[in-house]
Length: 479
Image 1 (cartoon, rainbow, N blue to C red):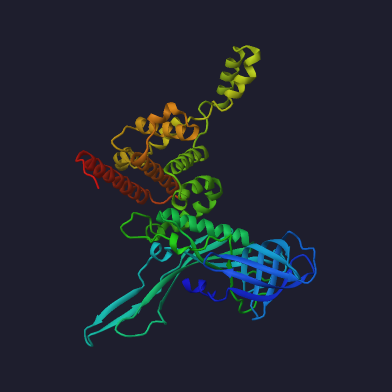
Image 2 (image 1 turned 180 degrees about the horizontal axis):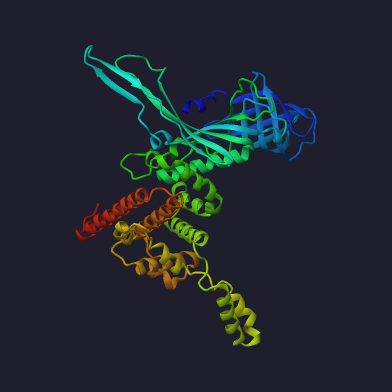
């Protein structure tokens, strides 16, 4: 809920207080400067005489003169001097507002509350019902409780929670605003480090970004720390800082109904299995996920996007498919025969050149990935045409990919005329992005019909785009 993020008041940019440097006996006055728009925090400590502070320390913690507790975690310290004082600037990865922790070992997380951009729309479920009372001719507005959507594993319980409330800041006139907000909650079964909790938060964010095909940013994070003797009430601690990819309004793209994506509603019935696969396979598929998501997050040239998405497909095939051409014994025998028939002075060179000769080529990897299969014979027609482009045959698409990849990697002028550029390159990137998305969603064991419908819709839109552009070209229309 956005209300958690507004716990930080925008006018609280300067916090004067007394600060302890973790692992030392130093206790210094200083000013904490927070820029909540850029999510940057800096603490400046000062002393009348030079002191030996560590360049790096786990924590710097203290209390402001207003009584607010802060802990800076994963810190670096740099010193400087003015005419009469010595200054020490502290930068950190995380800021914990609302608690003091004297060491890294004390920062153990029990629960995490957070949200990401577009969450309410992606996870939308109707909670408000309005009915006309025939007797009084008045409208009766009721709300219903929406069941939590839950995934459990051996490490934590992940919950999508709904809260429906009226806008209490709204002045009642002729209308009433009632909103359902969605909150994400992680309950760890054992005390967990903040960095591990942050990693799980990022995995959830990336999952929603994959499903919604939009950039997703964290709106807020708050935690309940693990304590050995829990009290009846433990205050939530807000977490922010440079390590957390907090929402930037200028970068957020609103999720729209007309854009094809997989909403929570489409996977809710199989949510536990879907998330089990996502968390279980995340480390293995991380290179593929990062390369795929780079197309949404990073503004760069079409050529760089193309190289990233081709690399993502190569990595996916390497990590999930057979990564050899011949059985190991057969290939070793073949290598031995070749090397024995080469003059001794060249054998070392030949052996080095053939070191990776048993791995599938890019052509062979693309051949397999461009030919998805289905256990349902009713889907065979769609699967056959799922990854086609501009009426090109599969081999033509593979050649376009290989030539364009090789040119933009090695810049061999002989390949320049064989590469695709401009609009053709844009469409080729869109096709490859659809392929990576298709295979990642398949890894989650989402219902085949759901994935196929999404990919088919995106493929059709790409085909329509091409048809319109070809029509414009044939008509010699200019803008």
